[in-house]
Image (cartoon, rainbow, N blue to C red; front, side, top):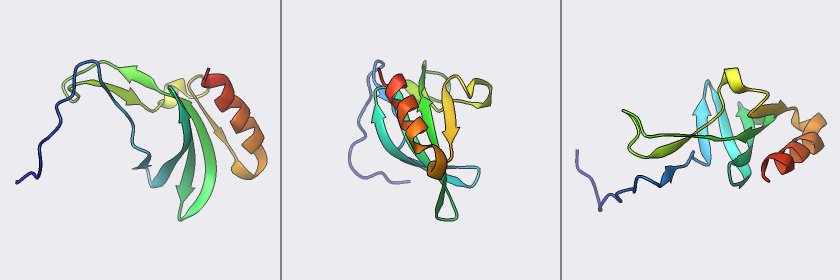
Length: 104
């Protein structure tokens, strides 16, 4: 495999951030906004927005798979404390309020 350009070496203190867009279990997640460890993502299925997720990232230490610290989207066990789902057409105001609380 041939690589183009030089790879940037990351320092141990640098944090590998989650991408602005990613796919998980058939859903596409696109970041709407972010402040610090708080972010708002739209959840898309078949090209339609089905939900808004407001999350607080957890920063994990380097491990066998990551050379630097890295952000982790909240898992099922921490949902409700570190992540919340809102229906976009009904609860956008509540999603904004939750985001504003967590971005402080």
